[in-house]
Amino acid sequence: MEKIRHFLYENNKKSPLMVPRVMQNMVTRRVLVVEYIHGIPILKLGDEIAKRGMNPGGKIATAAKQ
Image (tube, rainbow, N blue to C red):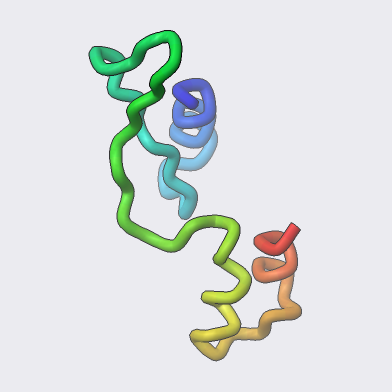
């Protein structure tokens, strides 16, 4: 996850996608603890776009549904 966060930061300073930070001091071999991010889950993005009256067949909505 940290690699994804770093990639998004380096390549797009204003990315619409957020990746939660890993809480390193709380991670064990069997438990992964990440920060909570309030927002729309990426898997529900297409439905949210349609609900807001945007074109659900548009490029963004189509990409979100894949």
